[in-house]
Image (cartoon, rainbow, N blue to C red; front, side, top):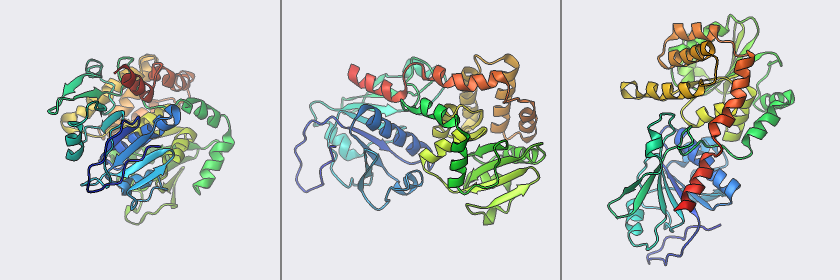
Length: 395
């Protein structure tokens, strides 16, 4: 493991190193850091690459990595060196093989100045947000010459063979399949989360969304369900939508509320591994952002994607681009209903969301086959980390 050198008053001699640096600013609490943490772990696990992950907000990071100490500037977890990105930097930056700016964050001036002095600078990559839109195929990998005369390459994660691919560990899909083969895994997971009263045939739904009246309409619908429904909702923004059903000002992890056929379980925030297994164990998942969105697909369960809202409804264009790809091999009526459900939820259309939920048959053979085949189709032979490594090797 190559650790950055300690800061001192004198300039340290820079030695060539094969490590990668990833810089990340935490914007939406768990989205950006969720993606970069998974990428760093996979590069370390699947490719044996030494990775330094520089993060500006260790407190938010600690919610998905509870072992992380927010007061410790440099620490190592799961083979990744995590460095608190402060101004000035807590330690000197040592040039490595690759330098990644995650989601257009701006590198510290000290590093930009240092880059100008290096004969062979690292491969400089701007890792962009995931998109299913076709235009990214023409932009993926393009260089942009910076003011210091070094090229920065734009790397676009996506669903096409021409894009940067999707984040997926090499062992993941086999692990999901193995997990779902045994009902005991679900029982043990729920027990570990202190979730009680869930029978094997009950419907289990995880909810991790932004605020939306559509969520309340679904909860009211689930109250009238023929068989019991359990909604697993972490503390946070989803609960803000349920003020008509719950005393949201006094909620705490561990609380449960039974409303007709629906039982709502309030969950604490969990680490990534536990959240992944929660998605694998539920019958349906409502997810938000980029990281959870991809994990819901790898869970091989039906889902609603609550995409981050943007000005001029640009987010709906991104949603449309994804639903078109996702539904390409679905029967026409099923594709139409599933798409309408996702659009209605994202437009805060409570009435249409409830209506399309009732129309959708998630247990249909075609839908069940699709959610299991989709991950293999979406990977397109190579995941994001593999394509990054291949991109760097090509030079």
